[in-house]
Amino acid sequence: MKKESLDYEMETILAHFAEEPMTQGGAIVPPIYQNTLFAAKDWESLCNMFDDQINNCLYTRGGNPTVRVVEEKMAKLAGGERAKLLSSGMAAITAAILHYINHGDHVIAVRNIYGSAHSFLGKYVKEKMNVDTTFVDGKDIGEFEAAIRPNTTLIYLESPTTAIFELQDIPAIVELAKRHGIKTIIDNTWATFLYQKPLELGVDLEIHSCTKYINGHSDVIAGAIIGRAEDVDSIFMREHILFGAKMAPIEAWMILRGMRTLPLRLQRHQKNALRVAKFLDQHPKVLAVRYPGLESYPQYELGKKLMTGYTGLFSVRLDCADEQIGQFFNALRLFKIGVSWGGHESLCYSPAISYFKKLPYERFMELGLSLCDVRLSIGLENADDLILDIEQALGKI
Image (cartoon, rainbow, N blue to C red; front, side, top):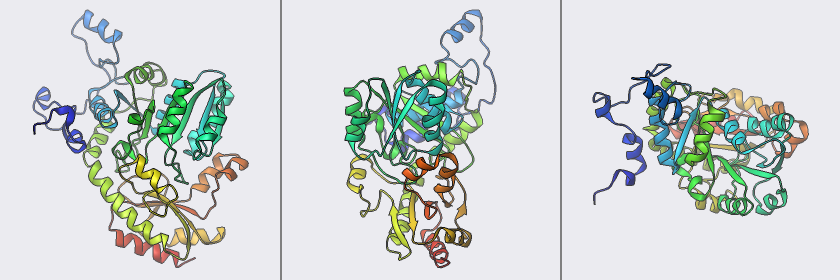
């Protein structure tokens, strides 16, 4: 059966969608337009470029052909009308939030979100814009409903959440939000637009740290916002252009290269992570494994409802004293110790370190974290080698 281009599967879209080799001298790989500006052929053309910066490349701080290829692919894969690449995941988070809030508004956000996003909502917008944020656990729809005020304009989600890896019932929250005229944003970095489709579930804006799986090689920092054209175009002209969080053409090209192998990489991340998580789930020195792909995970059925696959990031709580955790970290050989995740390499990190430094003590305690909660980003190495490395490190505590 012949397929139209709009019906192609994700692997084919990643390989070909939005690429036109015959308009680029037959180049099978889109060129890197590493330039700051684009000349107009005449006065009328220049005027048109200024009038429609969204659909014309005038200045690379706004639009660039290399960047736009990546944006079109992302929008197609996520089921959105438009996507905008920005210079970091945090740039995407702040731009999306600011798009939906004004002075004196109220936001409802999940408690265990990315630490910098938590600081932005919990402190920055309160001080600068008198915007209050109510943080909720996220698992109970009744808690969202109880938190709604007359001036609530936004619900901010992250499913699964950072560090704790808890899910939210996205369709139920979206239904509640629409009933009250409230906008919704979700950070979908963990699952990516391949394994979870929040826009198809009714979420207004989907954001990503492209630094993680989308690029996948730990060599680019970038973010993306995906949604309706009306919203993304408004962000383009306001929060993107005015704040200057532009995407460099060379970095967009590197993201494009990384995206071509995204389905294959995610399959390997998932396979390795399941192996490691199952091993840890049975280990006597592990108190808990927080991974949505495990059948023992409390929200496993909800995860199956929302996602078509699982990636390689999860956390474990070790059965050790706080002063022993350094012995585990220092004994690791294959796992590198560091922040971030989603690259080809396996990483180990203690979320409590950064949360404790960023959040007030009472907010930190609400998260339910300790130094013995270890976050593991499972890379593309051999799973048996990773298990052996963890096993020998556990033997040191």
